[in-house]
Amino acid sequence: MTDDAAALRGAAAPNGAPEAAAAPVLSAPRVRRLPNRRRAAGLALGAAVALALVVIAGALLGPAAQATDFAAKNLAPSWAHPFGTDWMGRDMFLRTLAGLSTSILVGLGAAVASSLIALALASAAALGPRWADGAVSWLTDLMMGIPHIVLLILISYGLDKGFWGVTIGVALTHWPSLARVLRAEILQCRASGFVAVAARLGAGPVSIALRHMAPYVLPQFAVGLVLLFPHAILHEAAITFLGFGLPPEMPAIGIILSEAMGYLSAGMWWLAVFPGAALVACVLLFDSVGAGLRRLVDPASAQE
Image 1: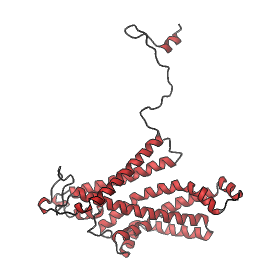
Image 2: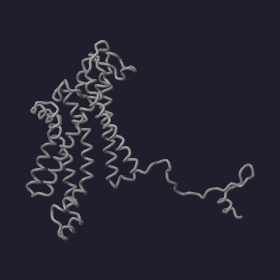
Image 3: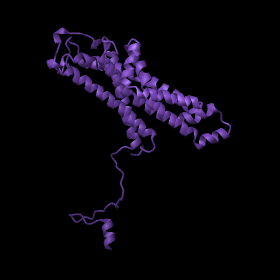
Image 4: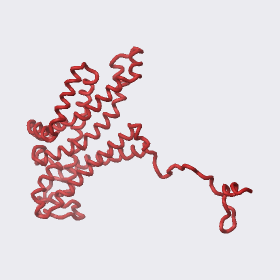
């Protein structure tokens, strides 16, 4: 037996029994690692389920979050009250869940409306006449030149604040970036070869839009919609904190943080730390959903 053959079959074990060695593997897969697309889909689905549970729990626990108990006011975090209690004896854990539920609903409505506005304007700019493209481009530049928070405060205050005022204000101020992306995607799709072939084969504009352009733009639209959620939630919390958003009787993270500012100097740190951390966690969950969808629809990053 040659040395090469002995190396392939393996050396004898310490007790003298021959032990067959496995064939050398040059590139072995990572057995414990899920496929990239499956892992991305699992993370996005898990984050979406967690957010849905927060919304449902906040809606169900809304009345309990408003219950007051002056005998248990200003209590530090404990097993009975994980987030402590406020100056009226309200449980901060329940208030945080109710506030997150309200903020998520505002962000969801605003993001959906803003995405639809972006899709409509991008379609008009890319498929309409030249004057429509110029008008949409001018409007987009105008909206992006005004600070979001200032325009959002003006719109919310003009609509008498409240749930719908904040939702409409966020929806009308967050569409420009997505509109630019969708316009570029629609123009690229219109200039592609398969659209030209479909037109020469006799397909009408409606058929081309539904069968070719809609599937081409839908992934970018879905990812853009999901990525608008964190911005909508943060801006809702910001203007509510400043007093131009949701009313004080409605539980929301911005209201909770705004009310907590007057008690931080008294050492009641839990009134702001836990709601703020919960808001950051929700934003990170939304970011996980967007990152997962982006990996699923982007061929360049699907196998990273």
